[in-house]
Image 1: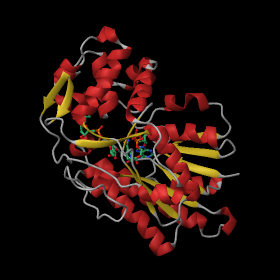
Image 2 (image 1 turned 120 degrees about the horizontal axis):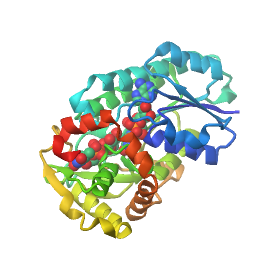
Image 3 (image 1 turned 30 degrees about the vertical axis):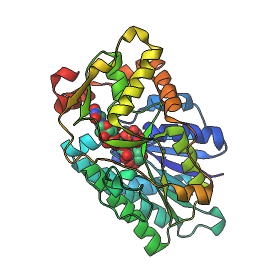
Image 4 (image 1 turned 90 degrees about the horizontal axis):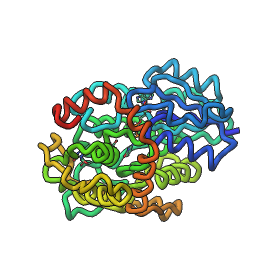
Length: 354
Ligand code: NAD
Ligand code: DAU
């Protein structure tokens, strides 16, 4: 039986991936290591509470002994590494934890895998999939072509730099030790379970509460949007069919300025909830994020050609499904907006926003 260590599986993409695995690989045993920070929520896994194929372990990827112990105890032969501090604005306010979790945490996982997998028989075919981001390639201009996997790294924020550092460590473990690693770099995800600090769920929440929706600068920055379910399908494809040592870009192929995106989101929300009135009036331009990357865009021909993956959910459909999910999970939304989160918002935007 395949035993897979998923890290960060109580967070947004991780929880979606755990559910995806339960549906598509029901015989796999999932060990889910998550520190349950503000972004990790066991409620995202409630339906798996009594599932013998899923074990949630509360713990820190940056604690070497704990991580090594899990490999020994469970006989792990696959790793899917999501655990990270992920919010750019938080990395600007408090970068230290990003270096600890994202860089040191990745190191301890790599080291545990290297030690544990030394003596595995070949047929165990172990694999270490590291989830990275398009942000490591840095900012593009409006007319630049989308970047390929061969593009140089040029991270801007402490978050992006910590992910770049982790990626370099992962690459080094292939080159030096032949550890069977794979790296994926993907664009902005959206969908169910995303913590409402990120643009889409934050805008939904503000709209529901009839509060200002802050857009940084003039809202002209461009992001490429990938529905989380498409991402999960890409990750399982890479885990099973990717070539160890390779990197694969995963794109949504749906670029929008932040203003275009929020307008589309609000118009869809308004159709479902006409009682909320005209929502565009809530859009408020605020001072720009320091070091704000202008645009990200990925060329994902490699994963299409080599592994036959391409995104299937278009933006309008994905946003509709996302809004419906949040509307039917209002209690979830209220509960995750804890006191600690409110403090962060106040620091970020001032008292008017909350
Ligand atoms: P998230 O912030 O929603 O979840 C992160 C999870 O990691 C949480 O469950 C948290 O409790 C856990 N975690 C944090 N520190 C930990 C530690 N020290 N030990 C164990 N667990 C810890 O993040 P997400 O948006 O789901 O992102 C998952 C991964 O995907 C990250 O590596 C991120 O860099 C990458 N990524 C995200 C996006 C995106 O748009 N969300 C895009 C590209 C790449
Ligand atoms: O590109 C992949 C990355 O996408 C991931 O690696 C990160 O983990 C994830 O957080 C995300 O980073 P972004 O900074 O692009 O996402 P965020 O949702 O924070 O912001 C999206 C865009 O919207 C960005 O240009 C900043 C802007 N923004 C964001 C917020 C929260 C606003 O204008 N106002 C806001 O309130």
